Image 1 (tube, rainbow, N blue to C red):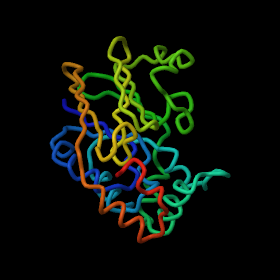
Image 2 (image 1 turned 30 degrees about the vertical axis):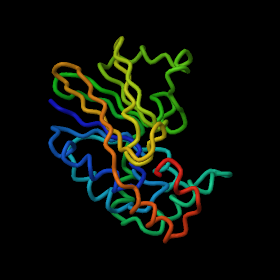
Image 3 (image 1 turned 180 degrees about the horizontal axis):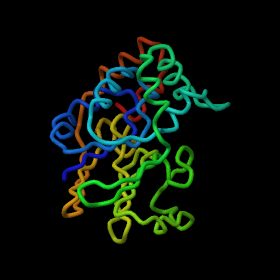
Length: 221
């Protein structure tokens, strides 16, 4: 079974466009949260991902929409949440409200655990390769543990569970203007990390028309 894993789309449908053929060709799609936030193609993204076969978990920006931004949230965060709050279709809001914080299951004879930040603190943790000593992820009896949040791709297949961050679709922070994802072959356990260049201009211009500040160019251009 071929499984596409996506994270941190952040209402950037332009970034999804080059990934669409790979996504639609996959047997299942796993989404690791943060469907909204930062950018302005909220309903376009949710229209697309809700029709995909697979599973999804809630991200911290999705939770901000449902429960409010934390005090002191940066301008960029507040912009994306306030825009989504005005524009999101009621059915999409209800769908986000029904997402779990973590999801575990079996696909193609393999087991996988999904979380946005980490299985311990799904909405607040950031797992980086150099900070794993305090995160005993080996206690989880799964073949694959997938998470997002950092917007940076990372793969550690040296032990079980395999640890995967597919990187961010909509706001990659290791390289501007690429949409990241991962393709998991459950039969062989092979994981292909995908990076597709895309034109972020339309997403930037749409956000500017809706009042985004100069921060909008960061990570996209």
